Image 1 (spheres, rainbow, N blue to C red):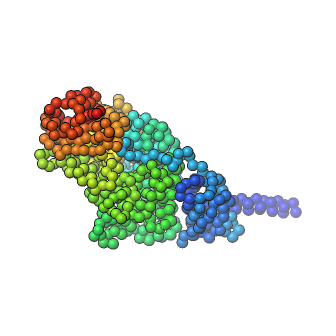
Image 2: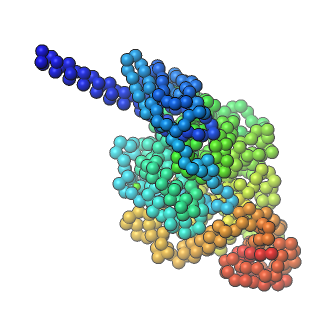
Image 3: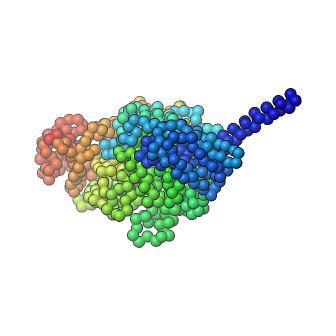
Length: 620
Ligand code: CA
């Protein structure tokens, strides 16, 4: 009897234990894993992923939360709960799944929103963005270089497609360097998990939308990075990708239904010709190929027309804004996704955070095409993307040539700039364009080391970038004259910042570690950036320019009683210009040269050295 009783007790303990562990292992993902009470949009989608949970009965132990709908996709490993949180306060509760006699309890939380969370400040033309590829900037924590259990098992700094070990700690460690340079925002290439077997260091093959890649750090580290950056006057722009994910994403490997991905989840290559989205003559075939085609075989194309996919993505971006307090989103390959869904996404984000900003990667050939993608575009009407900021790729193209090519009497050089900016009427808001000399996908401003001897080119380019209309973006390493040609592969565009790794022979984060020429460029850029931070005429002022004459391009930025006038000599020889034709932007004979810091008195004529740059500030 005694032994029998023992048996029964043992069996009961074992059985209870079995039930608990089975329940715990059954749920593999809860997305999002928590949410907030008091959001403007009262609806919440909770995606549950676990073996065979699809037929479960669902109940909540919650106050004032209504289960609006339980969606059971064709894959029995998923459940999608739609909750109405309109009357719900912050609380912890359980989501209980019942299947026959099996019971699974999933703890859930609606958190209290942080004070001011809805008023998070976006980025605008008063900012300058500094783009960092986290794997290639600085390795602050070598212990996370290789994470056991993740698919890519090594780091290899000599290999362009390999992981190099850079991380969020490395960025955190150099926040002072970035703030000191004078930029006001950091844009990070994607930090979300990319657990792919190879070549995912760049971050554009997301395998979990809610998780910072563990080789870069943790969600909490990212939240702290945003907080610490903010304390130093730096905003943070997060990269997101709604068009595609990585093929190792659980949502693809064990997809809720085959219509979560385009072409019924069968690889079909995109044409990459997204001009078809705005083409009045486009064939249905071309439109579908561009938008529904996959970016690559290992980047399956998400079907944003599936309403569950759309909600999943929209909520994910709101989750990161609310969780980490980021100031902006850069949306990858924006025109490759469904236009209407992306418009709804922008509306949802800006509805929740009216002061926020979003920039879409609109890599198209002309201002006409790009303008189509900006909020309020008359060319796209009655369609409206709701996207506040688009990327000015034609501007970048111009900067690859106008600082080398001589400005003639009729065309060439700055005539190209003049012509291009004179067409700004196509844009709904040219002041909200993201402008740049280069980024992680293009050749750098200097294509090879030998070119960097020409610092006049650098001075003119960064002066133009930082003083004409738009929201400027710099790519890490520009300040130390990093040079790269895309013909040498993407790895060449994304080299490690010298000094970011223990044992690096040079440390370009310090003046002592930079060459004299690098320090000259760095000093010029830093002075200009710091001056720009306090300049309302640049941030919000009007732009007025003159047809180039005698090889010189002249423009004014003006707001109220403050004006800036920039002179750029587009020739390789000294030019003396008559100032008479510029009188309307020269309100006073006295002005301050903001680089030389001296007060100058303007005469009838002004002499500029070969490829000279002069920035004058007037206080009227
Ligand atoms: Ca590391």
